[in-house]
Length: 299
Length: 99
Image 1: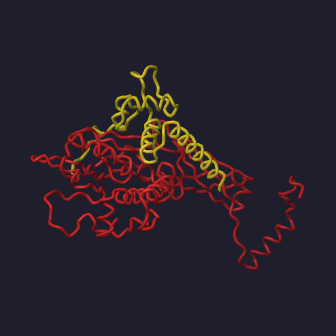
Image 2: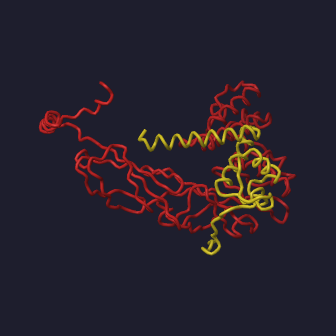
Image 3: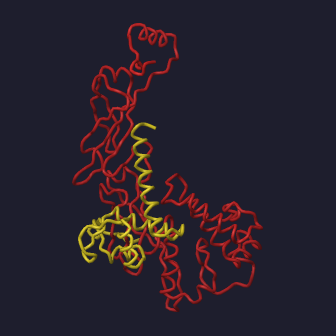
């Protein structure tokens, strides 16, 4: 976060008015809201925009930022008694001196909206899993940052790690309850998210994958090995298979009491013509196979 | 480091109105309004018997974030969530067609 220019993050000039800053923030908040746009890095951008706005919306913090830049939270002034607050939250210190549990809860609430994606709140956290974890079951460590009150009534953060045995077959959007693992012995609820997979797409309990095949496998039919998240399996490509045709592998989707299905979309890939021999072969096909795929289009 | 034993981990099937409200840090009235707007469709008849499934819990969380972050009202949230789901369904269809 340090080194990021808050004005650049919001795309406004240093002389921008409070209204300009508000408008820029609203526009970017819509653009990068992780619930609206799932693209890579949107959550981080949204967080950066929120952090920048948190500072620039507040005249005092903005003045400190203008004067001290990235070190605005620790300006060179007489040290103050207090805690080492996490920089990202950007509390004004005056606020904290009157922090009690109730007020704190309200603050935390406000973070739930902006910080919830990458900074877990006390009783809830998000756990991003790879598809392989879901298939094999996995042991994951969840890092939590919890507010704690010391005997003097001051709040401070405590880092805390919880080891979670992820049950097999848990899906996107499901939740896990970990009894007594949250702040002050409360339950910890984990929201499960699935990291995008380079090959497999998950849709509820079903999984789809593109399955590249050769023209001769498509024409003649073949038994081929294909990848599934649970390992390779043999599948039968029917003769005269079409590109885009879908094969269903029952029960090879998300594991569970009622496992989902795996759908493989056939994708015919032509070998590129790189040699004279290959060219000759294609030319022979063109001559011998009378085939016009556009004849129904009247071309 | 504390180890959460397997027997202490429970996959949540449904949440009650009280549980969902606490989970989202909102008043039960707000959740009830989401039901009135059709954003959530709990199982069970009366509010006391409502059970919210995981997709409902997710929608409630999203609704909460959208109202907070973007200043949407409930009608706006309902519309945005519908449009997002429609867009995601189309994106899945496109992906299946190989685009």
